[in-house]
Image (cartoon, rainbow over all chains, first blue to last red; front, side, top):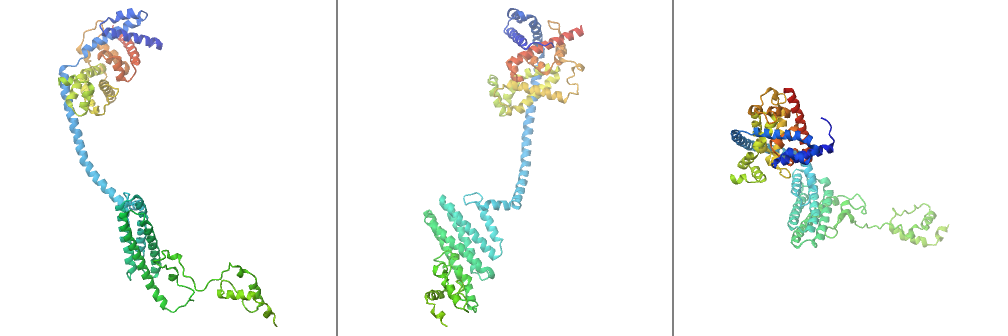
Length: 360
Length: 187
């Protein structure tokens, strides 16, 4: 095909369209071409003739009326088939889908139980009573407690979970969720009761570590008591009753712990003492006065023999040393080892005249 | 039914989307003849054109739930389905004699043996058309067999109106040259 410049092609294309539209409105396209586009008439006329031939041919391309009727019937039949097949497929799919869904659900459940138990327990461990995973957390705790058979571990676990309830209580008091507060406090009481039972039972906690475990429990219970006392005032009025009950329970736990400790101490006191009175036994050393001092580890009984106060200038002065040097045969007094009641003597000897030592 | 016939395409399409076969039947009556002419113009065989016409409307029924009439009239959608069906049929049967009209008797010839005023038979027109590029055939058939305007054709072929006018000019020029050649060969 010979190359026609684009502008010229567009010109002829538009002129041709103009002539064809004129023929549709009843005008003679050839006359329109001659009158309107005399410079393009040689190009337009053959094309108009071609268009006329095609338009005339369309008269012979009409479908049979019989065909249209047959085709519409065939079409309706096809549509019915499509609808029935699609609905059948849907129904078949739904039955298959139901079976598949059940199987998948069972598999997912088993997988969750087997594989995801740890993940769920980890995820739920940090959940709060308002979270969706919180019931899972409680279930996991119950599961762990049920399947922990060693009394020491069970008691430790129970106090750990009781500790969690106390921490959760803070958030709930801020949010003012009364029902959740009650739920948490009830759970706390159950955990403390477990601990109390194990402390009271003779075969509850194992003997070698019993003392240490009870001391640890006692420490935790004391801190719980303090915490509950501190939140009591800020808690909503409806929650106070529950907190007070929890306080009673924690105090009871403390009393039981105290009683158990004192029972375990008696046999050791009855046995012949092998140590100096100044060497206080461990239990007595760290045991708190439960009702007064809630932090037992920080409290120490004052020893009967006061330690030398080395910081005081009197003791650091040299005359003591000079005095010992002047007394041959006597050991020099060491601040750590020497009884402190000798210190005033030193003080006195410091002020004494040196006459007696200079006597022959 | 008579009320429905006066309804615009968009309303009938919406009813058909909801499964109304009567509304779809009205659409069929509106466009079946045009689709048939388009297909007959392209493939030249009446029986095949009839079969494909039914197939086109079966496809339209399947696709109509997804049809969105924003910017595209239903007629354009129907012709697009027709064109796609032709392409699929070409692909499936390109080794068959489906479109090898040389080996078959054209129904255009059999239905009309008389010559036009210009002395060109319909068989010659068909032979002239079938060697043209696909878009030339489409524009000529839609323009002169289906009597659609350049605007309507632009919607079906998804080109601008100006592009359709130029395509129409080029297609007519190419057909004239083909018919001249056929005329010289036969006479």
